Amino acid sequence: MSFSTTNSRGQTYYLHGKNITLKNGHEQRIYYFARQPQAETLDAVPSGYTIAENARTGLPVLKKAG
Image 1 (tube, rainbow, N blue to C red):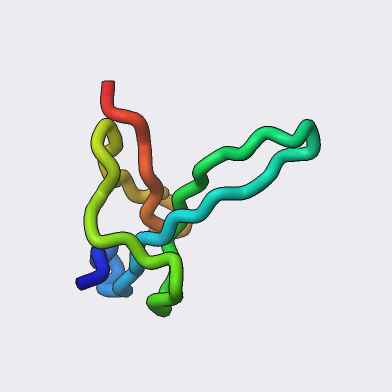
Image 2: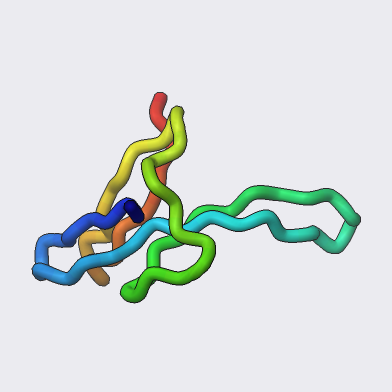
């Protein structure tokens, strides 16, 4: 079951995560929200993160809890 959230405008977004390779060769895990579920869909919010919403665009984003 993929994790989804609905923003204040009533739009549903699905949480995705994937590993990317940076220019210096290191790998980094990134998280993003998309309107359609894809292969990289996650089942839950990663530990240490919370969901916030961009007030101007309504796009959900992950923020480090702290």
